[in-house]
Length: 122
Image (cartoon, rainbow, N blue to C red; front, side, top):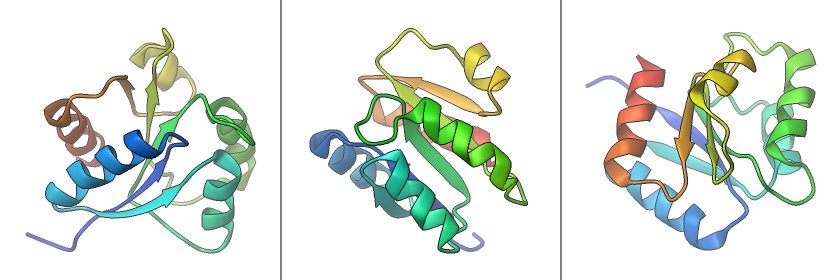
């Protein structure tokens, strides 16, 4: 296997953050966490270049919608695959229309998470 892929997990719920991190680390990924979109943007502006962003949509400070809005003008290259995680009725079609590669419904099943991450990194 090649180098370990880095995933930026943006999630404000401590239990969900811990669960996602555990699943991803057990799946062989490195994880950096941010508890809101502002923190995630600061990581990216500071030079962090994850292989994928797992983005919760409902968060305090800067939610997923505003994070995507603020990320767009940065035009990071190569473009980062983003998988949104949500308890709302957003769909993969919505995600793809907003420059995201995937969509996971909460609560997230571990196998589904790893499957979607692998699909979006392929």
